[in-house]
Image 1 (cartoon, rainbow, N blue to C red):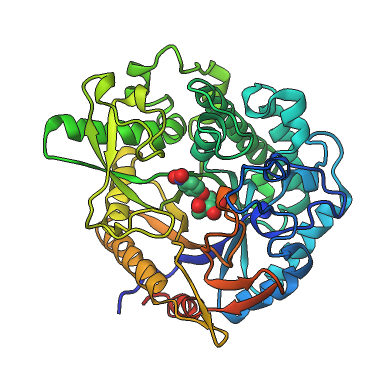
Image 2: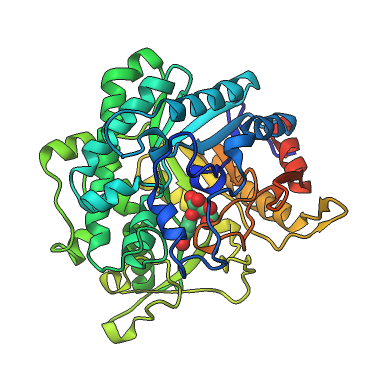
Length: 460
Ligand code: PNW
């Protein structure tokens, strides 16, 4: 049997917009995702998160299911417009009560809450009045919002994540227009990224100054990154893969762990990259107590010599290709999930080593990993072997990395239950608990049972 370290955290994850519903209830304001989904043409199946899993009304039942499955930790996010309907100003009492009850219910079931402050549902007022993440002022708004949350929940919440996947926010939201707020630009992602980093650091600062010493929790950021494997052994391709990783994860992790944007970015796009002032940099450097990582897939990287050689948009998740001079590709032998994401478990191990070396052996928490499969319900059950195989293979590689000395402290499976998968709507199902969206019923699937065994045995 493969066993994980004694204090390893096992859990599952969700986010507010994807599961809550109750979009106009309890005094909640609107978010950019409410507006985006209600705009015809933005979501594949024209669906939205108005109701989704209706977790807002069923959270007690959902938490009871978690407990039944032996889950020890649950990562979820707070809806900023549920807490501050206008994005600034007074907190909404009903919103605070909702999350307060949810947290109490988790603790009653001995489940540790891991709370993300921002998983993409920006109050729409901040978009309309201030241009969202493009405005430097957003950092102050985020800090004030974070302060409300630490004050209201920090007596019981000991694990905080400021931002989920700043890379997705800026690349898909401000670069490629596929996520809210739906902007398409070659320069705005760098500006939005800059203010996301400043906002993160401001929230961490207030936690450390006002709360951490008395509440005793930890705070960090979660970034996402695929692995980039050099296409060939050539020096040029190796450098291309390194460059691609610096433009992906280094963009957000280098300022926090090394105090500057990565060398590849500073060399190639000095004029596009905003500069930190000393005050910002002081706050950003060292602003994460753990290294939150979401990891899903791997691509090859190869060097492009000139612009004409760039294969732009073939694999649209590489950042701004013209800035990197990197081409991405796939091995035909790699199996694909229905999302089109390649299943390459060893890429996860290599990425963990890359992080370990570059950032001097940080404590890493895998805050998301998982896959979507074409599940079918037969007689109230789902034969979910493909997802079990996926998770087992990735966990094996993570375990190998731990044996080789990488400090991995936890694993959160995405996702606790099927939910609204952003631009894919309800056409993709990541959850280990099947949700019948017509009746709102949850069906525990085979992988849910298997994963709970892993959790119980602290190994597999
Ligand atoms: C993450 N990409 O999103 C999010 O944190 C979850 O909310 C989401 O449901 C999950 O992964 C599955 O998609 C991502 O294009 C979205 O590289 C897109 C990308 C990566 C992560």
